[in-house]
Amino acid sequence: MPPLAASPPSPAGATAGEVLHLIRSGRASTRGELVRLTGLSRTAVGARLSALVAAGLVLEGDEESATGGRPAATLVLNRDAGLVLAVAIGRSRSQTSVSALDGTELASTSHDQEVGLGPDVLMPVIAEHLARMLADLGRSGDEVVGIGVSVSGAVDRWRGVSVDSPALAGWDGVPLAPYLASVSAAPLVIDNDCNVMALSERDHLVGEGDDVLVLKASTGIGLGIIAEGRLVRGHGGVAGELGHVKVAAAEGLRCRCGDTGCLEAVAGGWALVQRLREVGQEVDHVRDLVARAVGGDGSARAIVRQSGRHVGEALAATVTVLNPRAIVVGGDMAGAFDTFAAGLREGLFPATTAMAGRDLQLLPSTYGDRAGLVGCVRLALESVLSPAAVDAGLSGRRP
Image 1 (cartoon, rainbow, N blue to C red):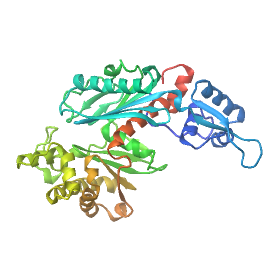
Image 2 (image 1 turned 90 degrees about the vertical axis):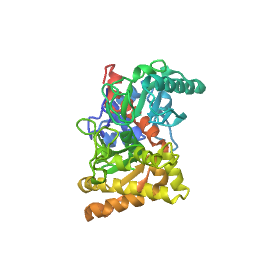
Image 3 (image 1 turned 45 degrees about the horizontal axis):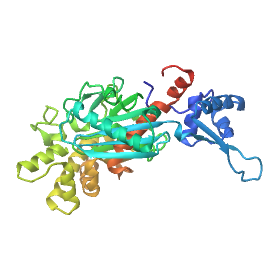
Image 4 (image 1 turned 135 degrees about the vertical axis):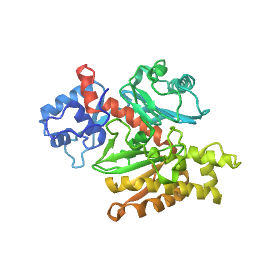
């Protein structure tokens, strides 16, 4: 499997894959710009472009000259060179989409599901949704070049499996690619839900060298970490498990992970719903709580705000250490962003250093409840269009 974080092109000796990266990113749209950015000769740039054009990855056309001279040929990624499938699997809702190679969404579906469904039940349903969308578009699985999948909790990206997901019982260690083999034989890449949310924000919000935390506050709580413009997964791939940080407010309370004292036990949506049910409230999901808060229910607003306060207190050390420019709030709690962010601010800023919090912004997710799905598209595209993957494909070898 190729590296998922595309490295910036080297100033000289750029490969064909790195040339494509410059075109995809919009930094270069002509041969002259590629010569300037890569340091390659026009002949070398031409050779790399010839390979990309022959592979169907790049289209070259004429552009009107503003000076009346000879027009420069414009270079663009061929969005029709393939399709990517995206699958965002949640505890009670899953989303799927089909996108062009430039990330443009062509079709999508969202469906609620019974909590606790195992992969043998849910994955065939997901495969059916994907197959139906392809058929409706008049496209086939042979055109699919990559599949991006997200689940909650820790994953083994190399094996394509979940390894520790309290929210998805029965999924750990189960390869997901075989379930989708009837739809497409394209390579499947998997990551956790917070990381793919961070990927969705990285291309839209994060600048080069930027530092941003993407908080998912929903049934569970987790972080996607962008440091210097790159997604940080950690040595074991479990960076950002904020929901299982120990907090004083949760002392003695049992978490769904089996431990006690975790942040989720006082701030996670599952715990809030459980507590409301214990006092006779009819609440099925954290979305119901958020809807009440948005509707003006004072009790619901207080619960959402208190959740934000607990999360802010737990985040303070991370903010002090990493000094991010912004915290982006996604997940179901973002539906009541003003209320949740008020609590987040109350818990966070008194507990972090003045310098770390001075310019810190709290922002709602750019893509709302579709952030995970958008991130899965980014995940698949990074896998198949990273410089290493493109170069390997052009040379006929595995990346």
